[in-house]
Length: 147
Ligand code: FES
Image (cartoon, rainbow, N blue to C red; front, side, top):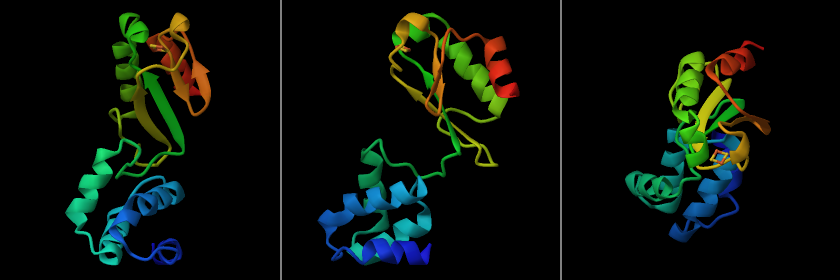
């Protein structure tokens, strides 16, 4: 942790209102906010760790667990929902052995859900990184993850 965090912190003065930019930079670098980093940031800014967690939890952009190399984003929007998105999410969760918001132990996959991917007419859909998969069915999910 040490080096890169000191490098980030060295460009700040340690004021409370620098908290968000610091958290953003750490997350940008690591993909999440590890506990050790939160501790260091608490020391540096003089803001308690619990308050920092409170602030960070308020913003959806921050996460406290590592992200996988591949991000699987399942749409839970209305169009997808009525065409079976819950079963799609269930199937993805079953295939990867994790729940929505979690990351596989080998750090390969993270599952997330969003309100719309923007291809409602071709629902249900999901994205794996930037690639969109449309008109999904459980067997299709199976095929995608067998690759
Ligand atoms: S609701 Fe799923 S793509 Fe729009």
